[in-house]
Amino acid sequence: MATAFPALDLFLARTLEVLKTDERIEAVLVAGSAIQRTTDRFSDLDLVIVCRESAYAGLLEERRVIASSLGPLLAAFTGEHVGEPRLLICLFDAPLLHVDLKFVTREALDQRVETPRIAFDRGGHMPAMLAAGTAVWPARAPEWFEERFWIWMHYGAAKIARGELFEAHDLLAFVRSQVLGPMLARNGGRRQRGVRQVEFEVPRHVEELAATIPRYDPADCWRALRATIDLYRHYRRPFPPTNHRERTEQAVTAFIAMHGG
Image 1 (cartoon, one colour):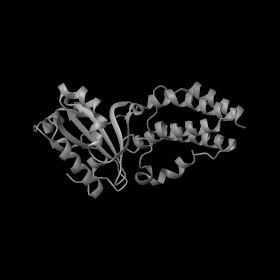
Image 2 (cartoon, rainbow, N blue to C red):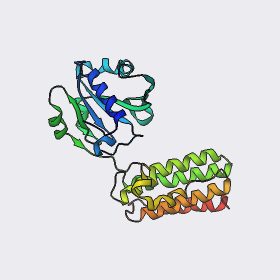
Image 3 (cartoon, rainbow, N blue to C red):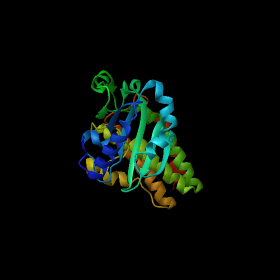
Image 4 (tube, one colour):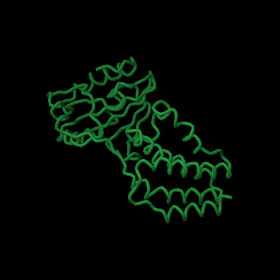
């Protein structure tokens, strides 16, 4: 399979040559942007390495050694920070390339967020395995957002009032990624992927999202916090949550009015 970008294709071809020689590896699948064929010269390469069950523990132990055999490895670390300890996140040189290597067993393919493309299949079992499993992209319900949003707004307001503006900046960016971006995607019938590719997929919404980015200035942090609340209310309307926290909303907005001038 080809991605249409020589650097990615060359790395994938070299990787397949190496991994095919290891009988413990049953298949190599390509995930991420390559599935939709939307890769570009800045894309990562997302590889799923399907391992024999009996050899899985050993392969996990050898992940860094395996990665080093694929090319000039500059650095690598595991993906606990994104809740994925099976993942080895790698940076290769010549050319500089970000590659994610996720080591799984066949059983892990039963429940997945997307259906990868098959690059190598030692036993020819992967089409049936993927057809039998289910691919469901994670989507948060309106109630998930409502349960958390006002607590986060109070947290952000308290940080601004105290003068911890970097904390406030972090909170607003977090809410943009975890709440506003996913809600905007949901309202447009798209996958909830934070704020990924908002600039290209829904450019008409960029300006309103940009209004939630503050300067390092207390008054502008309050402005951005209020813009975040306005946008949340706007994005909430098409899918009103059944757990609407009206009393909580009133209490938090009153706190902001009291401390935010």
